[in-house]
Length: 285
Ligand SMILES: Cc1ncc(COP(=O)(O)O)c(C=O)c1O
Image (tube, rainbow, N blue to C red):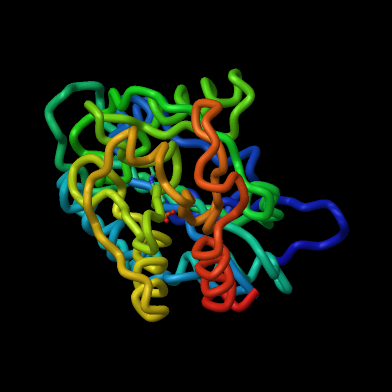
C-alpha cells in the first residue's frame, strides 16, 4: 500500500490490519480506553529513519513488564518498518504506537488476555521549531501525578491539563513541581545549567526516563560538560544560567522565562546552543 496523489491519507495499523484512519477503531471495552491500561511510545523519524529505535523498544518493554502486559515490544519492529513504506521519501515524521492490555468486560483486576490491542501510525512532521530557535516561556504547576511517571502509560490527563493551563496563561509549557523539587515538563525532561554544569532530575518514579535526555547526557559528556543527575528546587531553577527541555518532539528547546521571571541573561545560552548543534548532528537532519 502506497500513498498516491497529493492528499495525505493515513494508514493505521490496528491489531494486525492496515486500515484507513476512519476505520481504525478499538472496542469500547478496550482497557486502554477504560483504565488507561496501555503503554505508548512516540518516535521521531529523521531522513526516513527512526531515531534511537532500540532505546524506545527497550523502554516500551520495561513499561509492558511493569504493567504485566504479556507483549514483546520487539515484535513491533516489522510493523514500524512497514509503516515507513507507506510514506516513501518521508524526511521528517513521527510514529505513534500504543499497546493496551486488550479488551475484556470491565473489572479492576488485571485479566490475562491472549490478545493485546495494538495501534500504530506514522505521520509527516513539521515541528514548530520557534521555541528551539527563540526560547519559550513556562509556568510552574504542582505535580499531582502519580509515583509511576517513569512508566509511559496513556494516563496523561494531568500532563494535558498542565499544558492547557500554560496555554491559557499565554505560556508555551508547564514545569511540574513536587514539593519544592522541579521534576519535568508536560512532555519533556528538564535541564538547567549552573556555573557550567548541567543538572537534571535523576531517573526514578517522578520523571520519564527520556530518550532525548539520555542522548543529551551522552553528548554533554562527550563535549566535556559536567552532568549531575540531581534534584533541584524551584529557586535553583529560577536562578539558573540556562534552562532547556528535551523530548522526542521538542528536541533541545531553551526556555527564557518562568512565571514571568527571566532566566540567566534572557538569551539562549552558549551551552544550550552547543548541545542543540550536537543533537542536530546526531539526528543528521
Ligand atoms: C512526561 C514526559 N517527560 C519526558 C518526555 C521526553 O521523553 P523522550 O525524550 O523519550 O521523548 C516525554 C515524552 O513524551 C514525556 O511525556
